[in-house]
Length: 574
Image (tube, rainbow, N blue to C red; front, side):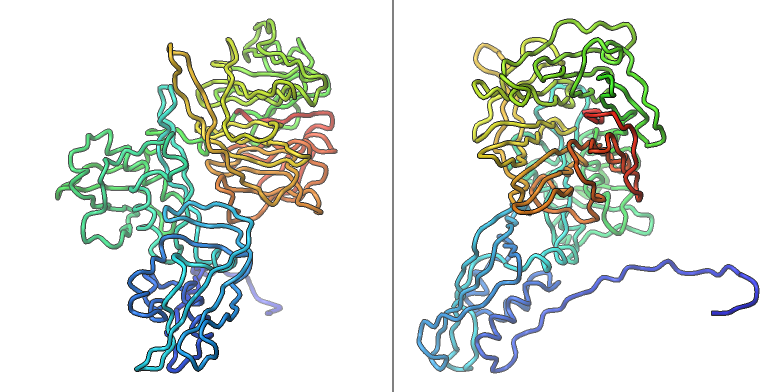
């Protein structure tokens, strides 16, 4: 280091993150049978787009029938290879190997992830060619298998975007549909193809795509790359040639939403079909459809020491809370839990003891009136949960009364509560949070002393006679490894923040995807004694918790800061 002289600025090239490429090795001449199996498994983790090298480990017939894209099985560690000789000694001409491990997840042919917790056991059969005397695999399971670390290196989670089909509001709402694609194998083209193919099976009943049925990339298009102006041109087949300008803008918006966080960046999408431009969209995607992740809340709300609803600025700059306008801020009822509508015009509050639910406007002079719902549960723990507002302005809440447990929705936060059917629900609901898209709901469900986080699909319709019918379908577990879920909140278009504990473990805070996978990126800074958590779908808004220190806030890149020592029940709108 120099110890004298002046300081001078120098031009430097920004550091480029280099990506490690993994190339598969073909089978060696006269390789023993176990090396053939090991080499094949290693080839599955390479960046070979079509698994051509992996197919060299197979017989000609097996190479034709093997479908690697059918499924991906994720194990806690790489698969272990055990020999189970079917023909006796190695000098015979066929051998059977078994692959074993602990299965932690699977990805189906649509790219949809599902967590798993079971033993993996599959067979691989080898034969020795009579002419060449080389070992090759002639029997193997469909799909690919790899350890968790290889999966995280090879695959990335992507949110495809569609439009909610069962909402009644005037504004179009975008719904995130997370899938996994191979990260270093032309991910952009994979994402566009997957988007055009439509929503995954689980989301399809409540989501629609603007792409006409039968739409595909134009024949011969194998790769999509933006130009030096960050413009991506997408040639489509003739099925899309006659769409209206509005539908074309919707299609382009879906692509822009989906490609938002990929590299290289895409700022504009041009769609072409039939040899002509259909439309081009730039800087207007968020005007096409609303997304929770771009809706910035105005305030953070919580209950102060006087049991009133108060608020501070959501951007983290304020520390002194002010009572909200209206009866809930004036202390008309002592509150223990609250929820604020997404437009921040109305609020719902559960009174002390959890027996009564009130709804009031956030305007001065408004009266509160009678409760819109009451619970007959014997104890506070058997009464009403914290409520949650959906994108339609409807209010959701669960009554935990063991004699009559119910999930309820109140249209517009008023009127007669409608009981929500939840087939497959096994246990008692302890917490409810509806996503900003209005078509997904997160539930903490307790059974046998354990609490699980489940994600369900909200379906709306009518019964005979025109009566509305609402149900939550196909509940699926997102945190099977946790035996206690203390609290949770939506923290993105397809992400939640969860506080819980594994068996024999300590309380921890983590992010989870709605499909049960773990998103990339850092986990929240640890905090002890968390009782409630509040997050916004907008990840620029600070995470907030109610802990043993009261209301605390986590600024981006910072440490937890105390906001209010006497406050409880923090929430952002929703």
